[in-house]
Image (tube, rainbow, N blue to C red; front, side, top):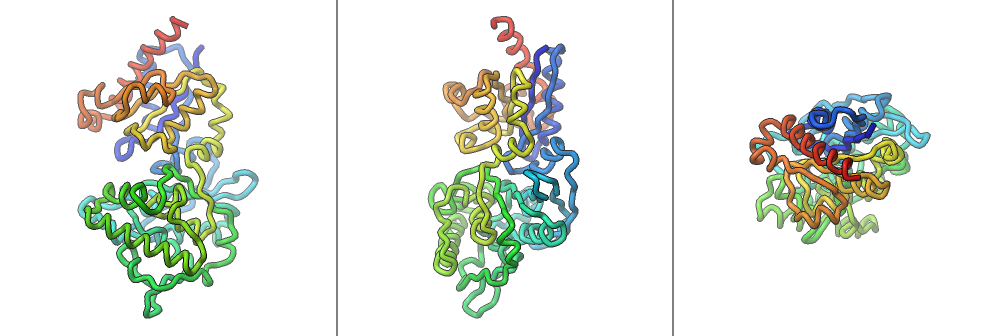
Length: 385
């Protein structure tokens, strides 16, 4: 009996990874009932990281916390505590603390959004839960403050020329005069910390966080320029005062520059999010159990190959000699490019549902239809082989 593994990521703002896997199974069984199904809800550090981890590591403890949300008001959130590599490990999801999904469309203010809550969660994990290492999923943020808010919450001094702590968000970075980490607790800077990156964008430049991601968070063209200028000034002050250069580090631009802030103020190491998730959940080791792997997310494009979960999982499955299928909301790559990425077959929900809006209106059925179509193709391939 063939075994099909559904390693599908969340369809951002539409369907969680777990529900997507369930919908795919339902559709696949319409055309191939005599199969064994594995559910591997997948994440690369963005939206849904904690949910996906909980499905794979149900013994992990949810730690409820009240933290500062992206617009400066208190919100209820949580992180996970579990043992990993023999150490008590905290896993924090940026999108659950300062995520864009937490801000109503009419209240979005990319210039004011803050990462302060991330610093609060880190302190709670270390001081109250005794975390010996911390993993932070970077993705889905509403922020562009370079991690300055997080640094403030950790005790760092980011002051203006009047020796007053600067305000929240990217807007106030232009007022920065000095940076000091003298008041950051030593155990925070000594606790191994890892930022799970789903992108390799640097902090600055045409491929940096301002030009690539700020428009997705509501920034105007003029604001994008201001954000870039403020982050450049911020990075120069950091390099002058802390002797730490972050402007060009791959991944430093993740989560509005939070990647850079983690490196500077927590001495964090930036790691590939999807590969780290696979290692934490044992997915790589379980690949031999499947005959075919189905991946998916909302859109496949040129950013996908920069470390997004579908690409990383597809490559891992291909190296293990498995058939690889994809279910995507939209496909923005040519067929030849999809084949070069290692996909045997793929389906676009936009096409199978007759338009993107129809796909969004009933994503469960759309994914089921796509999976049913792939199952038919699987039957053909099985017959041929």
